[in-house]
Image (cartoon, rainbow, N blue to C red; front, side):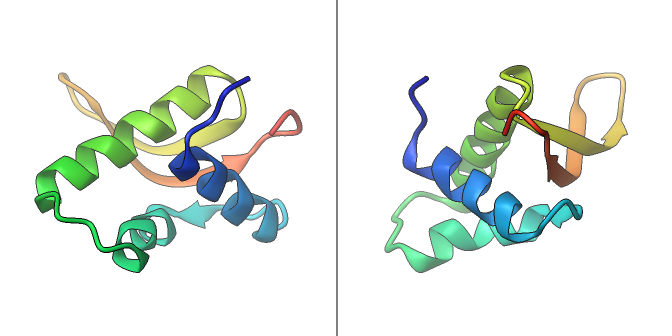
Amino acid sequence: MRLSALQKYTLTQGYQARQQKLSRRVIDRYYQKQAASDPTDDMQSIITRSVERLIEKKLLIGYGRRTAQKWFIDDIKLTAKG
C-alpha cells in the first residue's frame, strides 16, 4: 500500500495518540512545519482528501458532521488495521 508523506505523518500522529481521538489541527501542523507556498484553501483540501482516503482504506475513523454537500471531519482515530 502506497502512502504519501502526509498520510504517513497522520498515521504516526494517530499511533502516538494511543487510541484517543486526534484533533484535525494536529494534522494541520504538518504544513506549518514545512515551507509550503500553497494557499491555505489548497492545504485544507489536500489534508481533507488525504484523511478521506485513509478512511476509505479503513486505516482511520473520522468523526465530524455531515451537511447535504460534504463531510466536515473534526477528529480522527486510528483503527486496528491502521
